[in-house]
Image (tube, rainbow, N blue to C red):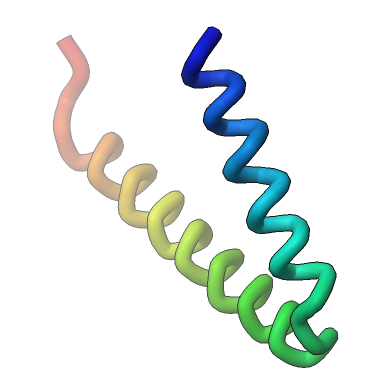
Length: 54
């Protein structure tokens, strides 16, 4: 429960920061995060295909 409260507080701080940031900065940050997540997903998929499951 404490973790949930901390996560919601952190989310509020981040959303508050984004609300005051310029739109161009927010868009660039969103693209960078999306690219990072995409690379991570591709690496994970590739790693799972290479190692045989038991």
